[in-house]
Length: 272
Ligand SMILES: [Zn+2]
Image (cartoon, rainbow, N blue to C red):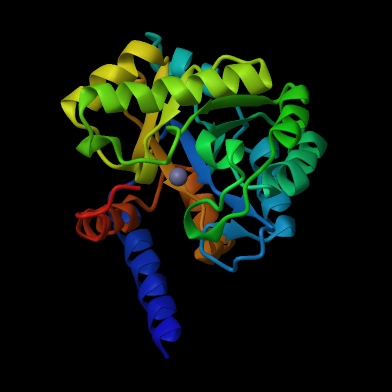
């Protein structure tokens, strides 16, 4: 009963958000999509069916076009208006990254950025929402495809906005060091856990170490956007084709704004 009510509320939210987009067309630009898991078997909103995921990537490649996160940063930092494009990002570090996602990325031939919460990989501990962790050897195979960029999602998937500067620095440095040691690549981009707005201290430590950082927002990024506050749009299982395509064009921001409001309340006393 509860899950039926949740599904109905979710559908109503998406329908309302489509209506808002019809009244005020969303800005065009570069959309950074958030994926978490594909074929991981949890049945959750952020765990997509592999066939649907492959179809999304093929559609993006053949229509809007998929670019790397480095290209996103250089285009929004440039001086000419950005053409619409999409970048793919993956959060946390579950084992479907190398079992399911890597072969599909390789087949479709599009780049992706992977934000790793390194402690879970290093210690082989379950990730948030019971995610089975990836292995370093699996991630090394993924790194070898050359379509991937590995970046930091903190060490413990910790909410940075409530930490002291020294603890923030330790979280960031540990994750960067491990990605360098285990994968032989430099982590140059950062993703805030739960996409929570950073404190001034967190913002400063992130800017000191990385080329970009991502939050939520569900809108396109345009020229002049702060590369340390890039907006992202989450791809959900319940999106279906219509809502997925709307998000890929920078739409459905209303849905995100309501979710952020609810999450602020939800994560009030949390640490990870
Ligand atoms: Zn995360």
